[in-house]
Image (cartoon, rainbow, N blue to C red; front, side):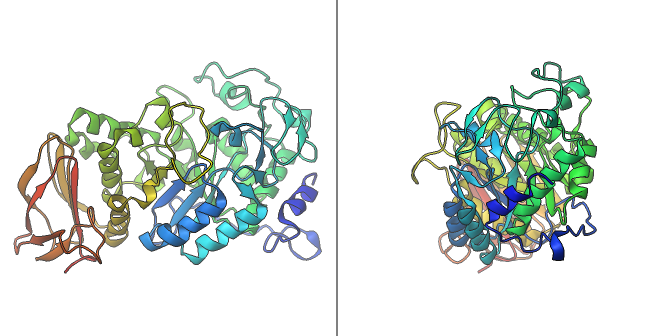
Length: 460
């Protein structure tokens, strides 16, 4: 296989679990996983965060807060440039980009695992670059020639941009914004991609976010998985488009699918001041066990289709709702502040939103872990406020309005004194306790843009 020498170079020879004796690949049986395996199903995406800092975040915050997964930005050599999207134009499968090298990456994976956090790598396998030059690791490349990996014949023959998203063949064979589109139906291309993904698995990566999955057929992706020794957990990026022939539902056999319709639904409800819309949040979308939910990501925060950190307290409340509601597997997005859409990440610590570490969010991660799969009950909504229970394990109330809300809420919680984990950590909530009466009622006052979250794992 053409890229084996590159894989060895990438790992420095450490390929435990990838190759069997004699250098032959052992293809183990695998099964699609339609939700993150394990009890802790919340993911934190640390967009464009250097790998060393991701490892530290796992140790300091993600692990202690109860996150099950961290998603990291692409681990490939890429085109030179300061813009965020340069990491989405790979020029080789070496780990030699601005976020760190192979040693940084492997150390990050180890640190996260030690903290009890699994790692999802963002995998860019649909395409390569849109031009020619020298990559961040020194690789000389042209648009259709990547030494040791791909030559002209490894790319689709359509060398034009996608124009009609209602033409499935065009979407999956032509070029996405000028990026050289790999022929992922080719056995040779599938083998090269499988080797790269197996390399990351050999470094301890637990799963993958498949970038631009919509631009590859499910059959092509199945072909790649079949060539891997152990594919791990997959989540596919498939953006829903009204009337388009390619749908998110077509990819659920591969694993989870990012549910973009969820974020737009949240934006509509929170910005309109009608949280009652959220009662139907699961309708017209993927099945809950196959959907990864998010308030926003790096694309939607820039195109305005969802809420973003710029929406302040409403954004925090939307994340709290996502973590409290049973639909889907939640993904808390943490990016950085920007004024220019193309702006790359900060060079230092300042400017990253660190949403994953916001106490109003970490408390809700604990809430999610505590209530598990408990059913949704006691739904109430009026204007910009709502409340509901998660069986007899949890209760949440949100006030997205501009004024204070004082109300006696109905819950299914046992009587007792609870910590409001939406405002304080369970071990430091002396001034944030709430009493639940014998009949389950909760007398509470919620400030404007405030939240209340109680669960049986955080009582006084």
